[in-house]
Amino acid sequence: MTTLRSDEVRIPREAREAVARHEKVIVLNRERPVFAIVHADDLGAAALKRRPGRLVSEIAADLAGAPAPDPFFAEDMGAVLRSVGPVTEMP
View (cartoon, rainbow, N blue to C red):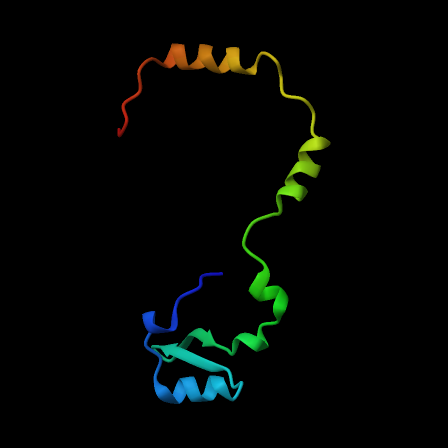
């Protein structure tokens, strides 16, 4: 979820008043809905607190059950890079 300060967006007074009454405001582009503006209280606490991605504890638990990396992987990758030769930064 992206968060902006209120002074960084321009929302017409009518839309602000409707949202303050907990009405959903739909923004149209070429007569098609593209945005919905809702009151923050209507999102629920979980939607406001949850950030994108996964918790570190979840990732650690997944990695704990994963197999150990191949001990020769780094050597194999080094051989591949040596066989390719120098690579330009931007092709």
